[in-house]
Image 1 (cartoon, rainbow, N blue to C red):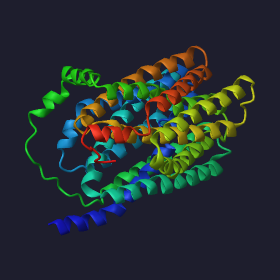
Image 2 (image 1 turned 60 degrees about the vertical axis):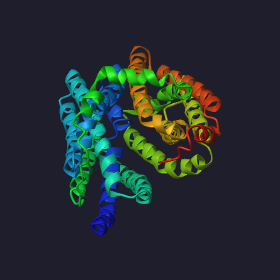
Image 3 (image 1 turned 120 degrees about the horizontal axis):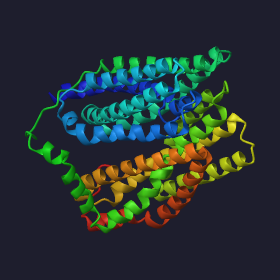
Image 4 (image 1 turned 90 degrees about the horizontal axis):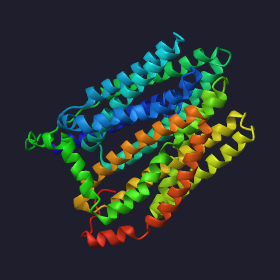
Length: 433
């Protein structure tokens, strides 16, 4: 039986690798952080709506996390549900473009709001299912290889396709060019969904019934009490002091994309440049930060936050001097912040595993995620309001300021010896890295 499971696992690795590459291409070409905000501006949606789409997507993710984690965990087989999520996301993109063809701005705004909410909801459901599926079907070493192939092959393919679409459609009107990108993204979402159906899924053996647990986990009061309780621990308070400014740093990609869209949404090269720069950022980030992370998580977080601050400051200087007409300037800026935020995101997760005592890790992780997501929803809505009432550049000013504060807090709080200290006090709790 174990032999059969091992053979199935070996057979499944190429299937899951292929599926993850196809999905990466689809997500890059239809990115809710870069491509869709760019399209929202090009369709003349109010800047508040374009900026608030980030918040709306996060609300969808929070609902999935809070209410659907238990039912998803209880599912024995997940490949069909994952395939369906890929189809649904692809269809959402087509709906957005179909409504955009009407040219009625209020209708387009409603469509984009609904699409972002559904994408947030469905994407988080997929993440929960996919994490469980990989844990059951793929060994740790294979997961790492898959991750690099996903970003490497998927990123290169997305760059190649973006350039090809640009060459074919460069003389077409803007809507035609944008529709071509979304159509290719939809195609790859469908191919990804079909690909995962080839997985030989290993049925999960269900252990003890957990019928009594969901009620506790789904209780808002119980969740709130658990979050408040975590603040009794000094290590958690220190971690959250460092984590909160990083929430603003994570918003740099969509708001840098918005300032680029504001300047270049009419350009034939604008969207292509944004796709290539963000795909290149993911391509470079994985191998670059892996090396630095081996030595110091603090170095990655401090460097990444400073990269965002410096890039934002340079972009703002060019903007206020009226020298930001070249699309390459915004493409380089988006590339740098993509590299930076990818590194910061992985480093803070690894640092959390270092400092969180083993017996508090799950509860603390849930508390951090809840607080960070609520803060991100509020902050992104606030930044969207600033962008709407004034200009996107002012939102970027706020991000630059918070990035500098974040660099300082990371340097002061993320001590290099934190892991050794915590391991001593928590009885050497070094499991899963």
